[in-house]
Length: 299
Image (tube, rainbow, N blue to C red; front, side):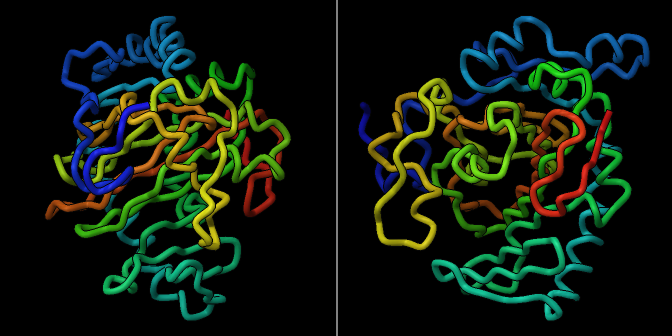
C-alpha cells in the first residue's frame, strides 16, 4: 500500500500519484454536450464502455451534461433554499457531533462548518422537498436513465439527496463509504447508486471530489477507531490505497456516477471559489426514502 501524502489522507495537497481527469483521459470521461433532442435521448443512457468503467473502477464521468444556463438557474434556486433554511434553523433541534453544529429541521438535517465558519451551511439533506426545481432535476432523463441501468430496474425512486456547499475554506470530507451509513435502513444497499452534479467549475485546491478507484469490489471496509463520535462512518486510514486516488476537477454541469461501496471524500477548499455539488442516490421504485420515509418515484 502506498504511503499517504504529507498532511495525511485528507491533506490539502494533492496525492503525488492522484490521477486528474483531463479532457481526453483513460478513465472514460465522456463529453456530453449535444442539444439535439433526438441525439440527446439516444445518448442519455450509459454506453457499454461507461457501464464497464462503472463496474470496474466504481465510477463513470460525463462532462457538460447540463448547460451553463441550466446550472445558473439551479444555483439561483439553491441560493434561495440555503437562505430559507438558515433563516428558519432556529426552529429546529440543534446538537453537536465531533465539534460540529447539526440542526434537524423537520425532516431535513443541516450540517454547518466548524468554527470559525460555524454559521455557514456545509450540507443540507434532503433538498428536493424544498424546491420543485430540484425535484425536476432528479427526474431529468439525463440522470434517471443511467440510474435505471445501474440499479437494474425499469423504474427508480429516490433514496436521498443532499447539497454540499463547500464554501472557500470549507472543511474536508474524510474518506468513507456510503454503504455503512445505509445498510441498516435500505432494502437493497447494493442498488443505491449515487450521482454527483457539479454546480461550480472545480478549480485546483478547491477540494475536488476524490475516490479510491476499484475500492467498491472489497465490500465494507473497517472503520476508524479514533474515539470520535462518528468514527464508525469513516474508513480506517490503513484501508485506503492512496496509489489509486482519482480526483475530479470537472466543469460545472458535469455528472459523476459512483458506487455506494466506493471509498470517497474530499480535501479542504483552499481556493477563493465555492465548490457546490448536488448528490442524489437512487433505488428501485416504490421504496421509501431515507429521511422523509415517503416514496418519491422518479420514472
